[in-house]
Length: 116
Image (cartoon, rainbow, N blue to C red):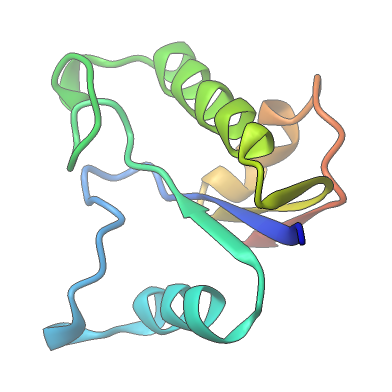
């Protein structure tokens, strides 16, 4: 059966979203709990040029390129056959908390969570 989802929109820095369990800090604990305890599908997305992402180096991307990448990732998340596309929450972290509503202006998430 399909499960609700959480789409994590990370901070604006050049840090990736991959978890490093050897030095778990606040965001890592939060991500780990969403991924392992919530019973929800959980998607974290690196900015263009970071981690396993595609695209030019992150330092050369502008805001619109970042937003386009997150929009494409959100659309892919909604198409996941295990995710209830009508029950996805968007979690905006740091400055992305302010950008999450802008990012979702053409979507219909179940809710937007902001931690800034």
